[in-house]
Length: 334
Image (cartoon, rainbow, N blue to C red; front, side, top):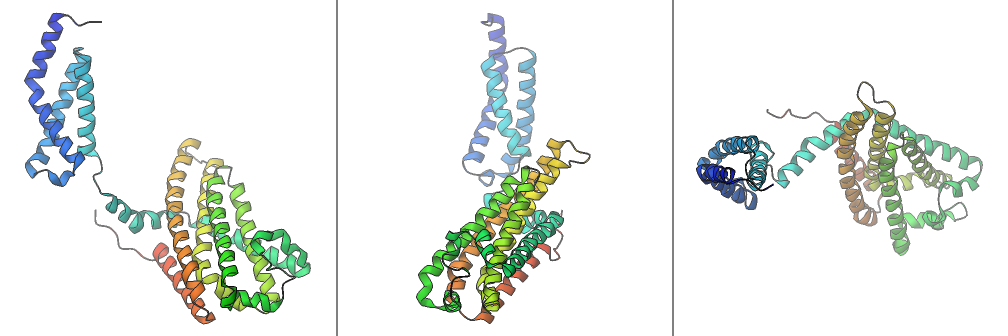
């Protein structure tokens, strides 16, 4: 429908009376968005809320009197831009990352402490069950450890070849391939344990038990050859971080699945959304842990061949993560 002459005249007068304020607000928004709020003077920053309220009032009048549709669309966009400047967060990317590592991630990890204990116990249960079964029948080893992961490190291997994997520089290429495969395996388990948590956390539980069984199979093999202490140092120098990451990812998956199965007083959708925010923060940090574990695996474990030094590095990383997540924190000023 084409507006009549009276309406067009009314719209033109309405625009002429207020357009200077709209244009000023638009220029300020352009500068703030293209550069930053720091490019504005104190006077300009104080003027923006006033201009925003004036524009919002003009938008209300324009809608109420059915003025030009193009004018209404322009005012809606301008009001939305000013709204996000006035009421939205203007923190920089570095500030957001700092807030995540300083408080958001540790708080999310602490909030899933029950699920973390359950995930750790499930991993330990898988390790103990696999070790007991292999102690009675070594053929169980092949059930828990895929051939690609074993790469000849199985009950048929000699004790000396198993020892060489831990120390002998001549076996470095094979060791690197095996270490990379092991890291990739654990990273996949970690991400799947979180991603499949929505299925009432059952896949997450199974993955944690399976990952523990794989670990238990290696431990059973090396302990049977009197190399348990040596394998512990070889694994833990990066395994403390890597296994902790897997446990946290599993805990995040359990939190999501449990909230879906038992939402409590909330609706199932609200409970799932709240659990998803917490679990997402936990897993966002797990990716960082896996990256850190990869560095330890690629450098520390390959370069350090002294058992006690390996255990010292493992102990230091354990204290680092426990202190970071669960240590006392200074309250932030409001």
